[in-house]
Image (cartoon, rainbow, N blue to C red):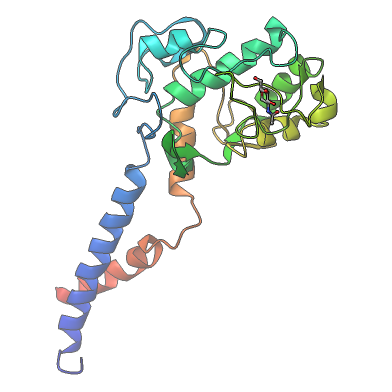
Length: 252
Ligand SMILES: *[C@@H]1O[C@H](CO)[C@@H](O)[C@H](O)[C@H]1NC(C)=O
């Protein structure tokens, strides 16, 4: 490498730095406005004017179809044949949160920073540790604390032999407040860490909201952008920025 004069070295580093910065920035952009590769998601987000009920906030830009949004509101829908009433009927105020959770999962184009490989038969990708706003998690727990279930993790361990999820023999039906003593237990454990409980507040731009007022725009767009830019992965961007100006100056 001593072969090259210092000036040319600087030029080469500048080009490399620029390239690295471009690649890093492209990688960050690529987690924004995307749909995960799962059971019912569209390949690309886009407008869906006919989204149903609680999924309506995502009409302007969604990963779900109108059909999926309708399914999200039905008991034992075609989506996952999941039975909310596996112990006894789930109260409506509790079910409201599960519908909203399904709408966010199926429709949101802002979960990109938390998409991971899933390696299961029914989906290639999943979400992991989505930072849920404190109020959304606490209200979910509050409205469901007296509903009844037999399991802490609803992703696995069910008896599916009848075609729908039934409580496994070893389990007992108990109020949510015993299965999930704190709000964080509910939000984090029920879908095997799809969500992470946070102390961030709705409207802070630092947590994902399960529901929002469409008229004021989707607040999760900015949240995804923030986390895409502040992820702890080894990014070349900071040193590239420091290196570029003097390197370019030396070319002049
Ligand atoms: C699963 O449910 C079926 C009835 O639908 C029952 O015969 C079977 O014993 C159950 N298996 C377990 C492991 O609970």
